[in-house]
Length: 136
Image (tube, rainbow, N blue to C red):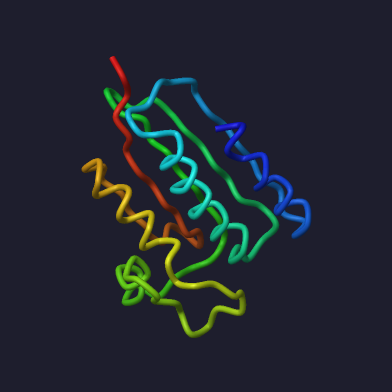
């Protein structure tokens, strides 16, 4: 994850946002390229839309799986959350430029592997989580 996050640390510096990371080491069942795309898309969104200058990213062993999680300050209207995973869908209130494909691609990667994922609001934070299988 550290090599994946290197370019995102640059974005966080430009936006003056602290990127807090905490990862337990594990061998995951996912191609490195797709893991890079998945994590980059989710973390970049968090950096672009956070309401406070902090984004937390973690990876923890959770039984036979690895729980990858991204958390930032803000809220998404409940009625919009599932729509964000549709191709080309963007919230009307978003000031940042984008194609509306980032979370659609994340969804495609998760579904390719059969990995459960979720985007939700939690006490003033927006949280994304995905369970990735660990190699045994």
